[in-house]
Length: 236
Ligand SMILES: Nc1ncnc2c1ncn2[C@@H]1O[C@H](COP(=O)(O)OP(=O)(O)OP(=O)(O)O)[C@@H](O)[C@H]1O
Image (tube, rainbow, N blue to C red; front, side, top):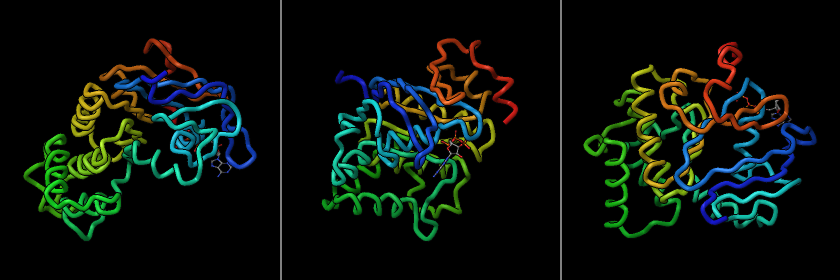
């Protein structure tokens, strides 16, 4: 279906030859926000790497942003990845250049040439994360939350259909984390699908959404928050 950003059916997911997740059925519609939870080592990263085609899909069917994972050619992988914005726990900004130049670097690397268009896009994405007036700052002059917002802005540069966020609030205090969550939810309301791997039960409770849990080699969709075993998550 066209309105599914991710559609994985009957997939077996391997790391090398080890079966990590079996019979995975997982879909995310345009504009959906979903959590991916599960204990350490339960397979969250393996699922995310399957979505980005870092792990090839060998068994089952999978479509991500219109690309068939089973038929993906090597040269199509960068095209798929351009439709996916990634936001990870450690901010991964280039520390030797300003916010503006961090974003400029990505645009140039992805083929943007028109100076006016570049300037406009950088202003737009910084506006979305409410950092328009800090474009001249160096990363170390920003708070952790502001740095993460720059990372989100960077992920948005090429108009992704999907944001993959792996513990995006991992290094942040609760109030700052809630600000990041608000931004991610706003993005999903604007039509971008967001999949967020997290161990943060407070945020899941505060911002309830569709939740997938990796457990015992399976991915289970949890419809109601009460179904999630918060206790076992807290043991991590
Ligand atoms: N390159 C690899 N080769 C073989 N096994 C691997 C490889 N990478 C990960 N694994 C194994 O796959 C399983 C799932 O790992 P994965 O990283 O997907 O878990 P996770 O849920 O993302 O964990 P975390 O919460 O720590 O990020 C683990 O048992 C891990 O040891």
